[in-house]
Length: 229
Image (cartoon, rainbow, N blue to C red; front, side, top):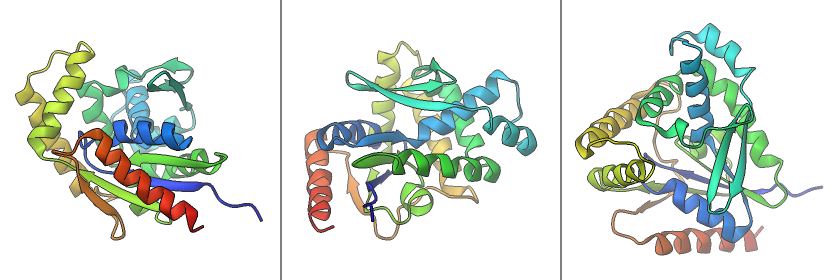
């Protein structure tokens, strides 16, 4: 009987450090990295390009059958491809981030992408790290290790502002914070798979912790659990 790949769930709001921590952990552990948030962002981008309403469940459901998402690690970055096109930057603009929040609230979208997210993880040889907002509660409630990263809202907004600035996106810190507050509210209050830590998730506040310490704490817990399988 084959052993299932070791599944790590890392959830949390935007700017809590999920993406950076997940990338470093995946590289150190030689695990696959599945950015589930990027998958929803790709759906939102395709819907925007086709002029679809974000509450048109029938058309969104049809669109899911035409969305092809893949990942490729290039250097330090996990590039995201939509239908063969590298959309790593475009899916993370403020406009698409808000669209992704709306699209991801639709039950038809979440149900349609659930099997894809699980398959991408279970097809890996050794293990997979999945980052998102409902990994430990919905996508992989049976994950081998669950973490929920948090951080002060102002610090999260500052991180997002710096990220956008480095990508050439001009936004004021005030606007970034306002968008973040709106998305936090939408993610936490949606009827389907709201943002919340799993009951058995290890919660970690990354507000003042350096990246290295966050990674080390998660890595130690993962290695400890892997040794007991």
